[in-house]
Image (tube, rainbow, N blue to C red; front, side):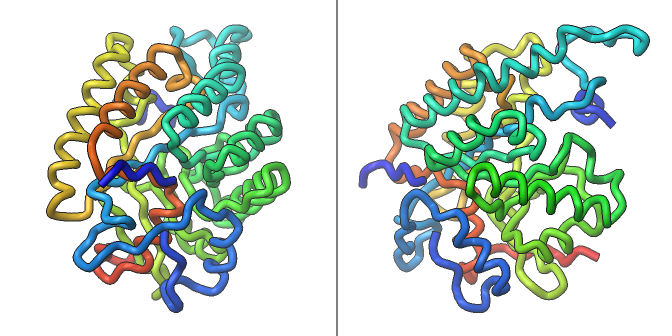
Length: 326
């Protein structure tokens, strides 16, 4: 079979199928229709793990956040005394929008890959044309908060307001209504999932517990988990200045090879995270290009957006269930 190509500081922290009736709430089902997958997912055959009988699904995130950082946001430079104005770090973030995202979009097009872009509302407001271009090219616009502010420090009302504003901004500018969510450095609050459920989200990604999607019950209703990654995350890997693009590419290939082999016996998913100002650098794009060629050389590999994965997981009786959050 041929390839399936379907569609606190950071440094401190580092130290489908259609939704089946009853699988999600009516509010979730209505929101799910707001972003239609680029391709219709074929049902898996009896005993299959993924749509189209894919052996391994790869899900790529592309963070759309540069420009939304605060005045004191860290960059790849020695700390500067607070009494001085940092004139260079903002240009490091600027690179993500001026060069990084356009270069990554061309890479995804080259390989026919659709990704999920977690968008900070303020970044979308600052770069509306580029945000629209992301969606125009068939990628998913997911939520990442309205400002670059940790959700874990918010009150429930502040948290809800941030998500409502993020949804409104992304939908107004791109025409796409987010159904998936990623918190600032994955740090949620005890109320996050309930708030997301109230707002009609289908899934979140702030979970490192599996190499496959799962379901968490939120107030007795299913909420999908499409796991994130740290080990395949450019912001973690390239914090080490000794990391090269070639090393990153090899690590991705090695991870792919193991998960692909396991995928013959069980449902496996590979998650990769890219950030506008990091993965958009030429050497990292070369690494990703090499990896994508490696992965596509194998049969039955699918590249899916996270909304597609979430919808699929919510329809499958064998999707692992997590303990309910209290």
